[in-house]
Image (cartoon, rainbow, N blue to C red; front, side):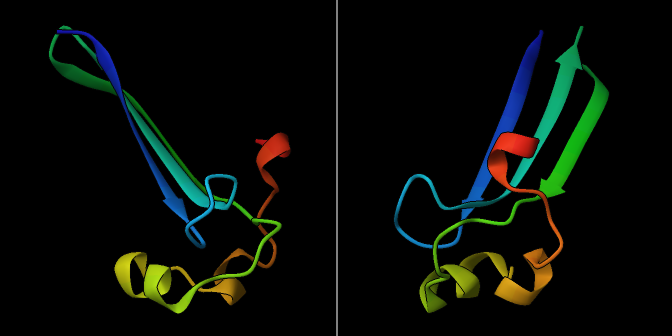
Length: 69
């Protein structure tokens, strides 16, 4: 089985508010690569999203913006 698992976390309810992304590449049913980075969104954080993923605005202060990754 070959696939890429992708997970986005967002700062608020808006689609363009990604604050982290993770990807895992699976080839022949084995994990062959992983990638994770925090992202500095250009929108404010909503308290409910922080409760879900635990990522705070201060955590992404020095992170790249989405176009940079």
